[in-house]
Image (cartoon, rainbow, N blue to C red):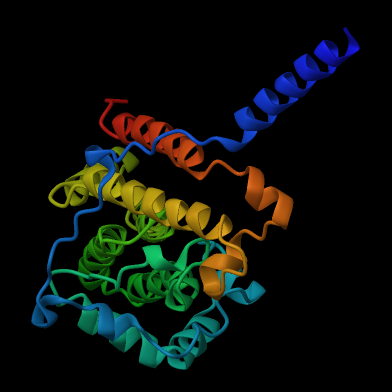
Length: 277
């Protein structure tokens, strides 16, 4: 009788082990496939903002202070813009292009491309230039520059990158909009409602929701690469470093189930992009 008990326990243990090891079938979701829109090199402004230098002084306390309407320092602003003249010129030339298309970023897995870290400070640089024009009395030029900067943020948001690209572009637009609201209210006496209406007009054209949907698809593709790489012993490269698993962990990970669950979550996020607020 004890032999039967041992067999039953062994069968249960095997069934329990198999439940952890056996993976489900991967669902290749057509609605989550990444589609890349080709952009001619002559229309792509990416090479102009793939600059080698970081933006100097973007995190300096004095720069943060002069963004406040009551603490404007023309000397600090001029020095900041002069130190970053090369970057500002590159962005100005990039604004003349219809689009920005970045190299496919999904292969990097959990890592951001190096240039994106520099792009995160672009909003501060553009705001300082816009404010400088305002304070010098070149109001129309400042408003024109604000519109171009806002469109540049939309170009970054729609650069066929991942979520970090979309968030960076959105942050640039938000920073420009915030400073524009403050400046038009404090300096020009324009009602905030009128400025908000102008910003809404700038929002039209390039669809941020569609760009965010594409970014979510690329994020899903990158996360799938991380999961696949994590299940391979001795996986080298940047993707392999994103998620290090030991031998036992690699044995028990169910990559297809993980990717299927990620697909469900991403699809819900994509659907929410189109819901009216």
